[in-house]
Image (cartoon, rainbow, N blue to C red; front, side):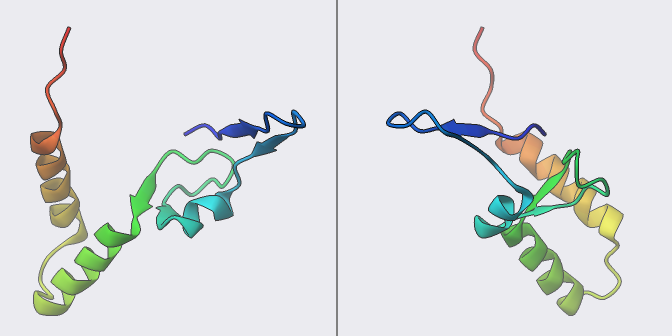
Length: 81
């Protein structure tokens, strides 16, 4: 993931997005390298995992992530050429 820069139209100052900016909107970095954020996890997904683990302690993280990825692929809109 690349950082975004926001340029003020009044003074032309560019402000670069910082890792803490992700946290303020509920996005948690899941990459080990803080300089190259490749994976961002939504806070709602972490809450869902916590709830599922509480009610079903035998669920595995990999199973949860595979099911989440499958659901995400099914919800994606089809691309129009």
